Amino acid sequence: MEKTMRGAYLPGNSTVELREVPVPTPGHGEVLLRMKASTICGSDIRCIYHEHLGRGPEGYQGVIAGHEPAGQIVEVGPGCRRFKEGDRVIVYHISGCGVCNDCRRGYMISCTSERYRRAYGWQRDGGMADYLIAEEKDLIALPDDLSYADGAQVACGFGTVYEGLEKIGISGSAKGAAGWFKVTDGSVYFDHPVHAPADHSLNIDVLNPSRGPSARVALELDPGSARALAHAILETLESVPESLLVDIR
Ligand SMILES: [Zn+2]
Ligand SMILES: [Zn+2]
Image 1: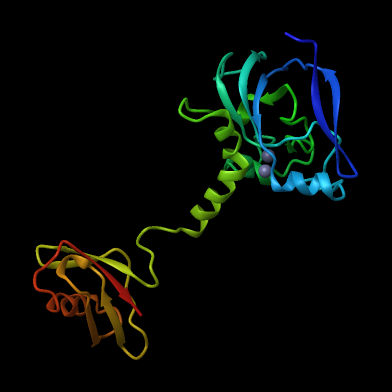
Image 2 (image 1 turned 90 degrees about the vertical axis):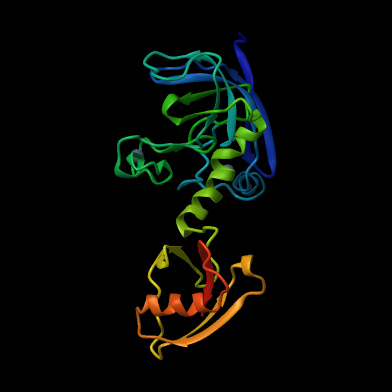
């Protein structure tokens, strides 16, 4: 293996500097990766073209840039438990202490350890080099049907968006105040409570397309009188379906 490698640094003034540096050796719990892909993030662009932030999560500390790396393990340090030489991996972009409350819940990005929270490419060497030292606990196995370029975009790019969607709880049944009615043996069940407004009136569009044009029901009911609501809907249909999608306003 080579003794030296090229690494990209961001000295400011809209420049990138390639420097020849020694190939590092993995310590306890660390692996050495041969870099295969390292994508450029929007936050890198800020760092390249605008002033460097000296503090905080994006405080650039003069290290090799690149926080979206994917590569192949070429050397495993002592104490590693899962990964081995030859494995294809993604590096999660934030290395947390691993033992604070946030890290244990899987949110290394908000690790509270000032000493041990270090993001790749910001406070510790990142992926814009021939080789990278990563901690084994930051690795994610890259499936064979994903390329290294796919993998590099997963953790920060795709993962950030995915986590956002998870948090706001989008699902295929969300449409206005829509709800699913499940009909079994003539009884009707709701997937979540339906609350009638204070004036006891609801306008309901039955969106289930299996019985032709959608039916419209307007009725009055007591708050929480879900059964009356369901029967009123069913009366507008020619036969009882297995389920109904209704839009309640
Ligand atoms: Zn990023
Ligand atoms: Zn932590």
